Amino acid sequence: MEYLKAFIVGGIICAIGQVFIDKTKLTPARILVGFVVSGVILSALGFYEPLVEFAGAGATVPLSGFGHSLAKGVRAAVADKGFLGAFTGGLSATAGGITAAIVFGFIIAVFFKPKDK
Image (cartoon, rainbow, N blue to C red; front, side):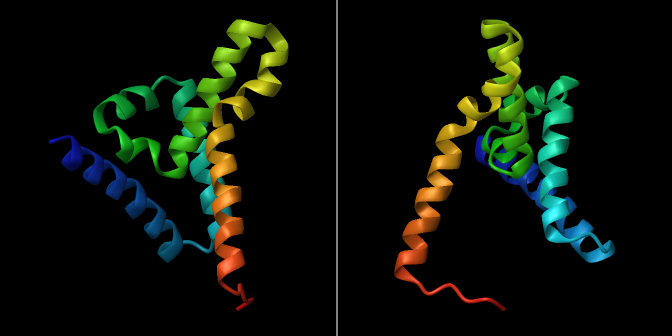
C-alpha cells in the first residue's frame, strides 16, 4: 500500500508540473524553482510533513521535497544554533543530496559527451 500512496502522490506532483509546462509560458527552470519554494512554504505552514508521513518517497523525491528538507534543516539549526542556523541549516540538511547530484552529474559527463541543443 505504501508504494501505491507514493506513486499516486508523486504522480500528482509530476502532473501538476506537466500542466504548468503545457498550459503556461513559464520556463522549466521557473517551474522547478516554484516547486522548491512551494515545498518550503508548505513545510513552514505545517502542511508538507503530513504529506510526507502519508506518501513517503512520493512526497520527498520531487523538488518540493527538497524544499521541505531545506525548511526542516533551517528550523532544526535555528533551534540548535540560534540566528546563524538560518544560514547554515538548509545546506547542512541537504548536503548529501547536493553532493550526490554533483558527483553523479560529473560521472555521467565523463562517460557521455554533453551537447547543446
